[in-house]
Image 1: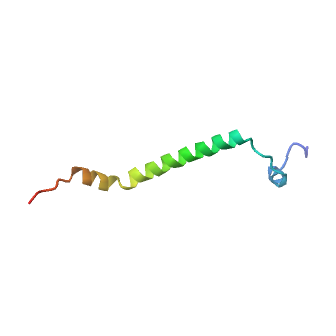
Image 2: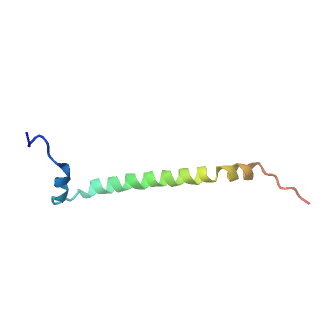
Length: 62
């Protein structure tokens, strides 16, 4: 019965295995793409009101 309940936190102390370089490159690329889209979304949504105000503002010439 004790074998059924393994503590997964005890496995954290075991030696980590190296990841294949191609898998590491793919994961890091996916993380970079996700970060890019998050930064792009923050850029658009945080300045949304000023973006619309600047878009519809007209400059009057003197």
